[in-house]
Image (cartoon, rainbow, N blue to C red):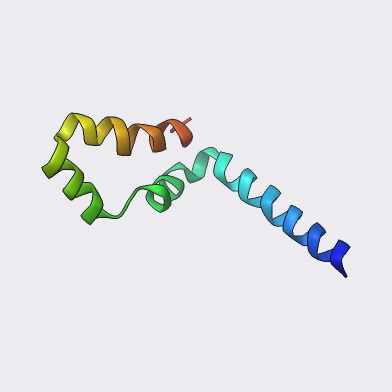
Length: 67
């Protein structure tokens, strides 16, 4: 049974990796991975727009490019 559980988890991880790389799903992937809007607004208020973009948006955009 342990082997089956490991196999299922491995299959799930492969499917997730495939979905993350699917060029048609970049919008969904970005939306799921951006921080909560409250955290984003707090970051803007504390550190400014440029730091917010570079620390909160750019890493997600790089991880999930439009294609």
